[in-house]
Amino acid sequence: MNALAATSRNFRKAGRILGLDSKLEKSLLIPFREIKVECTIPKDDGSLVSYVGFRVQHDNARGPMKGGIRYHPEVDPDEVNALAQLMTWKTAVADIPYGGAKGGIGCNPKELSNSELERLTRVFTQKIHDLIGIHTDIPAPDMGTNAQTMAWILDEYSKFHGHSPAVVTGKPIDLGGSLGREAATGRGVVFATEALLAESGKSIRDMTFVIQGFGNVGSWAARLIHERGGKVIAVSDITGAVKNANGIDIPELLKHKESTGNLINFNGGDSMDANEILVHECDVLIPCALGGVLNRENAADVKAKFIIEAANHPTDPEADEILSKRGVIILPDIYANAGGVTVSYFEWVQNIQGFMWDEDKVNNELRRYMIRAFHNIKDMCQSHSCDLRMGAFTLGVNRVARATLLRGWEA
Ligand code: NAD
Image (tube, rainbow, N blue to C red):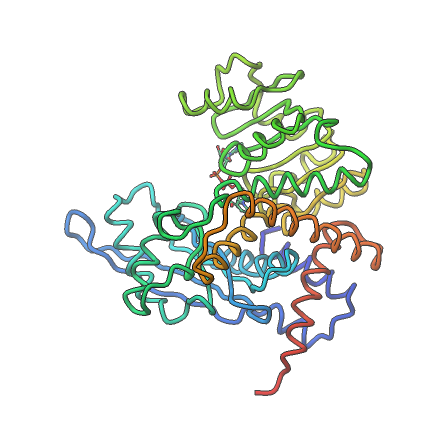
């Protein structure tokens, strides 16, 4: 099942639990606006090349729409649609005053020079500048884009609208980016895990962890778990996997990765088959890489008692059912990885205030938002006798539905 089908299925299930009116349900599912633009740029050799750019603005009942822009050869409009919808529920779960959006350009950023990427980003911004904005739609980095991409969007947008740092988040600190943004998703994952474990009187130091993916989210989650005394016993990335039953020294692994670019030949552990990582013995499994990695082929073999969905959509619906039947507790993506968009919101707030917060304030506020959302989800689970995924979906959908009804339907 693809991401759009799975998201829409979870939405419909939440709608049934909440008893949503069918007209409202349809209106919440259909995107507010879908934008498709042609972006033609001169390549460095003088030839012309065209790419297609998308922006799906899903819903703005609770505030400006918010979501990443990805550069990837297979940017698929259906997937962008699903991810835009997910952002609507995610921002509502985190209770930040935003709706959801997502966008992308169908290009391979690895095959473009820096100046070609800059030209492409500027042309894309020229085509959509009237449709994004501080109080309309606020892009952020995603796959294949980064703080530099946001700096170009900021600059191009500001040519039309005046200096506007709040039009994008995930910017370089020198242009109004927030302290703590880089670590925010991994840090949010750790706060979410602490909230979940506290329910059964446990803490991170009592647990063993396996982490798939050692990029931004996985490496920050690993570092913060290690700092709190948790044992990270296996880690994998695209280059391979390493295990150590006594706990991997994460700062040493980070140094090894920094100097060699991979996880193999690390002398603080044994290498293992990266395909085995998801079924490795542990208390807590944290997928931080790709979507759909937990599926009907491996769900029955997962040993973890808890799964924290740091990646987007790592568990397909069949695996979800198998794992739930087996009593595995899954903290869903629309909550577990909301730390990134929450600190993006703090960045936007700081830009609008014209006042920069120190990193402790950012981290303390992030903790407060993550813990509050966890308790809000648990309340929904109790009211509707449902699991954490449906607790999160009903929470998010209910907040958006309430805002939509309060704003009214009259044209
Ligand atoms: P990243 O590109 O920094 O890291 C991805 C990691 O996954 C890399 O270590 C890569 O080697 C690894 N990987 C790729 N294919 C793999 C495979 N087959 N097996 C094992 N590892 C593999 O990306 P990121 O920003 O850390 O994002 C990771 C996930 O978290 C994605 O699903 C992303 O959508 C989601 N997410 C990220 C953020 C954020 O703020 N970065 C926010 C919300 C959700």
